Length: 460
Image (tube, rainbow, N blue to C red; front, side):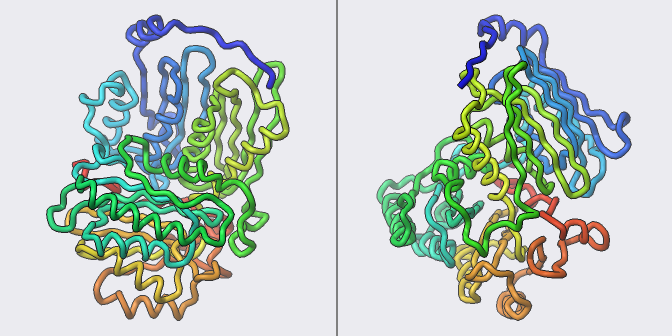
């Protein structure tokens, strides 16, 4: 690697400068006609870009443009954002929250009421135990996992499940099905862990990859970031996806890396179909790979997104070997693909009860459906679940199967079926109509994977 010298900043000087020049944030609804401008100026620190993007993403904002500059000791960003419907951000409570959490009081967490976010760990969601699972995916695996938890008298209060390149990563939040309290009995937890490991181990028999793993999370990592970390550590970016799951050439992200020798940067350019949380996924991956973003330009032109990042490794080096460049490209491609779910989405709402997840996933398995991504949440007494499904061969779900599902579970819970882009010729884009749906069907959905403030119940 070519080495670049970094300026040295004394920690005490930085703290003093931060007190003299506290972070400034402004929410501007006047300058731009079609979006709200959120401007952030503050002292630079490691990971600050990811923190800001994470906050905006958790608010389910659509970031249409962004200008990022954090060279030297100062961090200056401008984000053009809208809500999910493409409107400006005008809610006073939301604006007040943004100004508090990104402003001078942002570091003093006790002074800011936490926004209903998504964090891994028993301490962040109240009286629940967080479980992490990683292993090889196969049809019916989620059903088997939820059945084991139900048989051992664990209730799944919330969960997120991602699959990519034949791997599955899950974060599940469970409690005792009678007391609704976190389980701290080591014997009981050991039995659960062993049974879950056996399920994952069985998936690895015909695979040359690593053995599935189970762990109990005690940290405070953002859930989406943790899922990225788990799949990255499992090296899901290596190899290629099965032919029936591989993206079409028109949907494959176009990523290039060039050197800017005169400035001492590596320039990463990403061009792909736009979607919600794309910026978060890319910045998250670069950060966890120990790269620092100094400058960036983000723009969305209709269904397409164009992003350019000027980066260096944390040690000050740029990417000057083809091997390292190829690894970064593969990891960014995987990060973009992990959240893509082409097929049919099933949105279910029912009164919460013990074993509900086990029942629903059993029905999906018995109807020959494979879950590619899922979100489970409990809000009040209502369970709200979203499942992205395909058939066991990875093909789109046919109409007969959907109607069979409606007959079997439609009388017990609300069921909304949506076709997502890539679900077959003529498939609708979802909730909208007309031109927006037709545009969405050309590529990935630009709407967010949103469960209605996932952990509202626990963080209230």
